[in-house]
Length: 219
Image 1 (cartoon, rainbow, N blue to C red):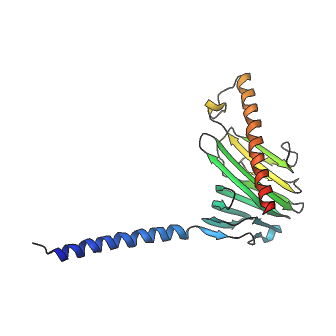
Image 2 (image 1 turned 135 degrees about the horizontal axis):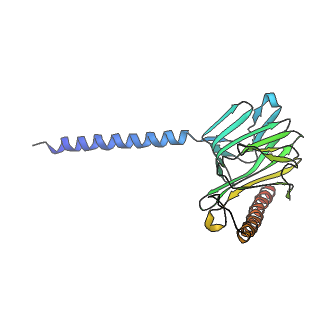
Image 3 (image 1 turned 60 degrees about the vertical axis):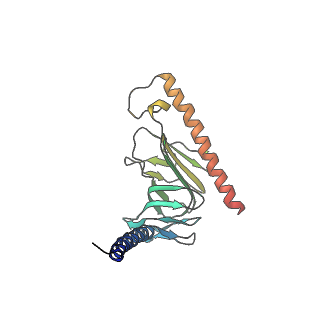
């Protein structure tokens, strides 16, 4: 018969193993989140551009390839997160002030930034669903596509006419909310429903951006 102290030693060894294993997993997970500060700049030397954030945050990975900064699991303090963000700046310096993403019953993403310089900026928010709606505002004024910005085939937003505050918004609704995920033809009533919902969502998201901006200015 195995003695009691031997059993306790075995149980203790097993417990210690799982404890060390769990702590190691937590440590590895924590190490994947890299912190950054508002003073950090992500420069693009050959483009004479730079990217920064007006608040601290974390990301799992950031890399510069072909003049494009790619962020994975980007979290911005007092704002929100984006699972993926590819951003570039040419002859300009931009500061990202707000990011948001909602992927539940609604696919939506928002990014706001300020820019210094008359160059170009490009953003890909990682939204791959077709049939969505893009909106861009300059200084809280809605700008028509091809009048300062355009949508590229890979869902990258290219901006050329920005001078100060810019907000980029993307969203798409499932069919039951008036969207067109399936690509089927819509009736006139359904099309108007989409326009109404679009206006409401854009207004709400713009309000959120303004509130965040005002709160940061008052800090």
